[in-house]
Length: 425
Image (cartoon, rainbow, N blue to C red; front, side):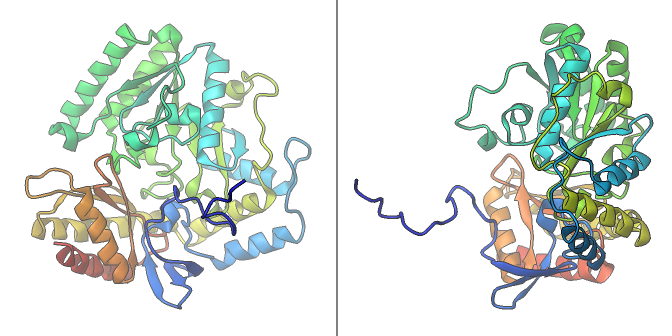
């Protein structure tokens, strides 16, 4: 058999694209170092994951200590102390009566588990998701994902039972917040009347601030309208806090900006400062309605990841990182708004806390993913790491520094970004 000309030594899949040309060898706080010793200001946080910064000493120490004692205590066989303690600590951060948790490794796994429980508990087949949402890449969560068509391309048809309703994106509709909320709630009522009757709708899954779509916040009027409809019809409200949660938006949970309490909360990313860990929580009475044997996974609730999560929560409390995210986010937003007034290619600045996005547009005000890509590359040449998102070729540049970031580092990043803006014209 003839050998493929590219076979031989193993290599990474060409389908996995890195946004930068950097090979990272070390991280410290807000900095990444490449294999030549060059230092980069990291405003990506590994897509919002390294919330306490790279290699926070307390997180490192906790993980090292746990590695020496127990690495893998498979939780379908044994309990381990970090798992039990983390469930207790998470319960303290959740709205009542959420206090029962299932742990997995990735956000998409936790979303899928929440989907399964929703169907079991309600006996209903359908889910309502919202246009622009991102919930994961596995088939169930992907079926509720519509942040960009590329994620679903070549995989149609998706899983059945998923219905979409509009999300109150004020910039897309060109309306004020209340008008967008009222329109979307009317359309949701239309969906319930024409596509998925409440008797067949198990849950609504929503991000309080849409991530991959371009950092688009919901509104209190809209979210409270969802809560009213869920209460009226016995539908579960599932809050996807994978990216917005754990202090990222200046409150511990993104949904706290909108005065609404969900039935289920899903978390991941910033939960363990870089160790793979996710979870969803709900009330004990709801969790008990799942079918026996319906939850599991080989690596979920890994002992080292749980120890890192506990240390992450300690650091967040001791160093006031939620409050810091609010304070530094206000400063970052103000600096970005200043740039928006000076550079017409910045069409919009939006988000909450340290989860902000700058939408890049062309001379006609249309989304310009190509220019956004050039800006990000020019920033990288100047030792600032940024990433993009958005349905129109990645037209939104996101700002996701670690929650430990300080004013001086934000100012340095903004000054560098301004240089990149000018160079990319």
